[in-house]
Each structure stands twice: as structure tokens, then as C-alpha cells.
Length: 265
Image (cartoon, rainbow, N blue to C red; front, side):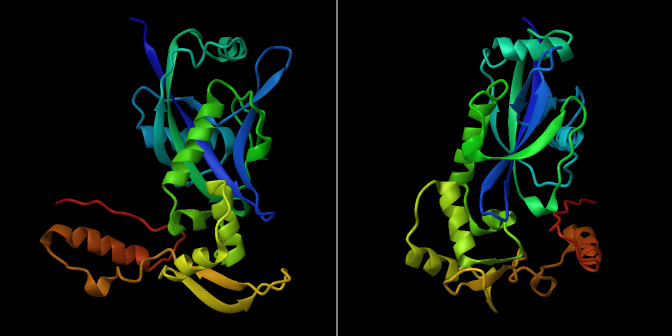
């Protein structure tokens, strides 16, 4: 039996100021003539490397993006996924055994584009944000399938906490609804949508008004911390003393991340 290689491909989605959903793609040469193709950021996993650590390393090495919340969504294992002529051409340039089978694990991340500026490195000659409806149908390997499945996974997992990662800390209801409509690929009833949003205790209405639009639109602020979970109602015991101690220390230095700690004696 021939060996099977394991790789990781990352679907990184961003929402820009023009309220357009974009995906991060890399450009790479596929032959010595400098013909190129676009691809999702991806590469092989190290023999002793954890998958999540590998995803973070690969994304950083190809695009310079770091500290993203990456979530695994699917494994892609078709024996034919690397057999196309254009893909074999690239594999012959960078792999010792280009005809060996490669199974890949898909990871997805949602980011505010204003927080991340990609820079290409390694075998990537460029890294850029591309509108979803302008993505080439000729991405490397099976990356079009991976991208489409990532979008479908996102639609199945939609919630306010996940979606607002794509928006600024303050945003309008119109911006939030527009993002949902882009992700779901369907129009939503304005009244019902706003009624549902008003039930979310983590979305806070402010007194600010969006002066850019012709219709008044209240500015919202999203609190990514659950106010019902705090140290005052935390049940302390012998088994969680260490976790509680370190959590208090972390909260003394507020950061953009909400860490999870697992500790044992």
C-alpha cells in the first residue's frame, strides 16, 4: 500500500467596509514558465505535528496571519483530488513524490479584514482577499469544493456570536442583516430579523445613529463576553482552584481573546 500524506487547507473569510464577503487566497507558480494559479492556504502536516497547531503554522507561513480562531469542518479524501495536470505540475516542483495520495483537513476562520493584512511567503507569491462571487472556478486541487463546503458549514452553524466576528465592535442592524443575507444567500424579512436580534442579550443598542445611510439605523455594540458567567457565581472547589486562579490573573489584563483553560492537579 502506498503511503498517504496529510495536509491542511484553510478557508479564511473576511467582511470588508464595502459589506462584501471575501476569502483569502494565495497565488503560486505551477511551472518554470511562471504560470500561476490561486489556491486556499494549505500545506502538508508535519509527522509529529498536532492538526490545529499545523493549521496555524501553515496559515502563518503562507500569509503571515496569526492568532486566528480556526475550526475544523471536514476531511477531503478523494483519490483523484491531486491528479489533474495543473496540480501535478506544481507537485513535481515542490514534492519528492508528487503522485502519492494526499488527504486534506479543512479548517475555517472568520475575521475582520481591517485587523489582518496578509503577506505572502514560502511558496506563495501573493496573498489577497477575493470576493466570493469572483473566485476562479479553477482553484488548485479540489479547493473550489473545499471552499463551497466551508460556506455550507458556516451557514449550518450561524449564530450572532460567530457572525459578529466579521463586523467591527460597533455596527448597524443593516450591516448585520446584510452579512446574514450574504452568508445565507437569501433575503431576510427586516422586521423578523430585527425582532430576533433584539432577543440577544449580548447585542447592546447604543445611542449613536449611523449618519451615512439615508434611513436612521441604530448603532449596536456586541459584547463577546457572557454577562451571566462571572467570578461572583463561579462555584469554586478543589478541582478547579488552579483554573480559577489563572483565570483571575488573565482577566486583570484584558485582551481581545476569551481564553479557555483546562487544568488538573
